[in-house]
Length: 177
Image (cartoon, rainbow, N blue to C red; front, side, top):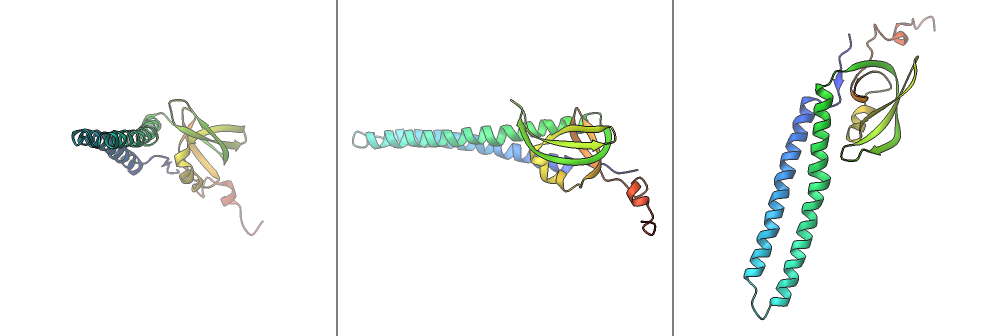
């Protein structure tokens, strides 16, 4: 019996949750810091420096706002979506398929969801296209090529390398070859 290596293990889930929490807190701190800086600039304004303070306040507000929007869109949201995807994979019913795995260069973006990379699994039944989260590409490439894949809703949830007892290539006698 082969042991499944999940694409998202407990350590990966913990790391994603910590990243989500920290980036959300950082987003709030930067937003509140930008607001506090603008209020301070407004409080320090007098008749002689009103033009400069207005420009400084606008610059702080715009730059701080763009940083907060960037963090919210590309860090907090992406991490939250990947965490939801990982929980879906770990809680779903997995089906096993065996074959030769090839990771393709094709990448897709599902609107309102994660970025995915396509892979092809070739076995005696033919070729089958599979999907997995792009952030897990390095982890999946480490797995090798001849694998048993575990799928949940068409997404790769984990893999297992065939054991020597189940691998026909490992059973052949090296002397006969």
